Image (cartoon, rainbow, N blue to C red):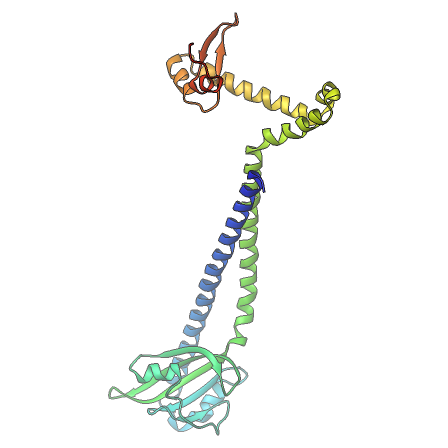
Length: 280
């Protein structure tokens, strides 16, 4: 693999790595934001439900059932020991939930608990929020509200796909821009090489190739442009020849200057070394 191809491959691999890294970061941040927003939403719904049953504990089951009717949410009433008292999904459900992350967090003294995990009862991923009801500082019971992630993640994933496409378009534009810059930087070499190869392979047709080749004409234009730029640079430094000569002397390529009469007036150190000139 030649130097140019290695350069392009290096940039491609680097941009590919940055693209996937940026997407992982964006994806993680977006998922976390969606989850946090829905956790807050479930908390607010749970607090609203608690206010409803605060003065009507006798009708808890009826109020809870009506509260989550026509939705995929479920409410579970849990005592201070972590045992189920009532569940809107299955009123006959019983057993301890003290080791569930959201319930355990509340029983350890937190103001609320939450977790996103697989539900053994529903056999799907569910977001749980648990809030304690206290009496004289002690937990009287725990209200847990749950909602399957399938009810809110699909809509969020549609937005995530749009973000992915925007991110992909950005990196594609960046990659194309870098490729164009690299190609322009190597343009003079890429222009002359095909013509030189033709001249080497067909030395007798050298004159015709140079006259008819569109690539060669483009090379002439590049040389004229470079000559014009060099001329502009020279005129810019005519007010200070010493600075101009110092600049040329520091170049890594060989440079010499002759006057109108063909007399050598300057030659830089790089050209002296290349020509192995000892006495000048």
